[in-house]
Length: 125
Image (cartoon, rainbow, N blue to C red; front, top):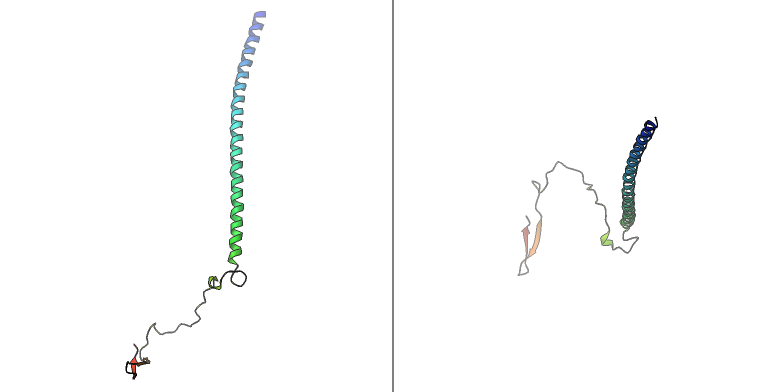
C-alpha cells in the first residue's frame, strides 16, 4: 500500500514539475514579447513626437503664408507692382455682331507727310 501511495506521489510530482516547466517556458516567451512591445511603443512614441514637431512647423508655415497673403502695398513694404489685383469682369453686353471688322464700315484715313513736307492721305486697312 505504501508503494502505491509513493508511486502516486511521484506521478503527481512529475506532473507538477512538467506543468511548472511549461509555465516557466511560457513566462519566458511572455517576457520576451513584453520587451519587444515596450521597444515598439518607444519607437512609436519617438515617431509621434517627430510628427507633432512637423505638424507644429507646418502650422506655423501656414500662418506665415496666410499673413503674407493678406499684405499688400498699403499695409507692408511690398511694392505696389506686386499687388495681386482681382481680374475685372468684362462689363460689355453681348451683341449679335461677329468679331472683327464689320461690313459697310468706313475705313478712317490717316494723315501722312512725305519727305517733301506735303501731306498725303493714306487709307488704313
